[in-house]
Amino acid sequence: MNKIIIANWKANLLPTQARSLTKKFTAERPAKNLTAVLCPDFVALSETASLLKKSAFLLGAQDCSAFLPGAHTGEVTAAALKQCGAKYVIIGHSERRANGENSKTISQKIQQAVAEKLIPIICVGETAGERRLKKTKTVLAKQLQEVLAPLPGNYAKSPLIFAYEPVWAIGSGLTPEPLETAEICAMIKNLAAKAGFSRVTVIYGGSITDQNAGEYLQQSAISGLLVGGASLDARRFRRLLNL
Ligand code: PEP
Image (cartoon, rainbow, N blue to C red; front, top):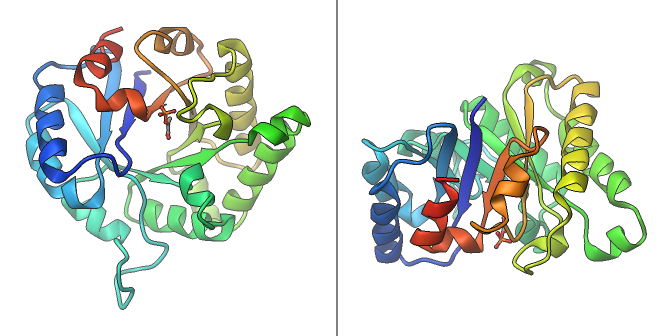
């Protein structure tokens, strides 16, 4: 199966910069064995969708509303993302959890995404302190249980992506060993399978660059990468897409 590489641009780019970066990215095809996804912010979503139309790149969003379309000022619904051309949506990124987003909301967002046939990229991961106390597995099991348990039974056959993103690895230049990362990704997949979710793939995110990506992609339990900082540099990201 193709490995997936997802660019998370966060709130780093103005619309003109997102346009220019998208054009640079799409000037070359990603390697045949890779699925490449760009996740701009909401404002750049429609224009990025048009620019990606004839390319091999797919579109994702960085978040979606926990609500159906209606009177929810400032929200962007999964239905709106779908109509813009998104296929994926990142949910529960640690930068959002740090601002108060909890598992209940994350689970509701997953429900909205799946109902619109978007593939959610659900971020989970431990903090540095939790890792020091050897609590990584307990923390991940709790995060998984809290977001999966409230989902309706018929969601168990929907494709879901979990992104294992240790909080201490995001933007820090620090990374867990590829082998250890693969073991954790396999554990996440097993936990989801035990909860009845049979179409789960697990990717890794945190300080991935064109230099270290290959070591993670070699691991069969790691189905792809979520890339922040290195996805803002067209040359580095294109190198990463052609490993
Ligand atoms: C992220 O925030 O999802 C991420 C992986 O960031 P970075 O690659 O910059 O560590």
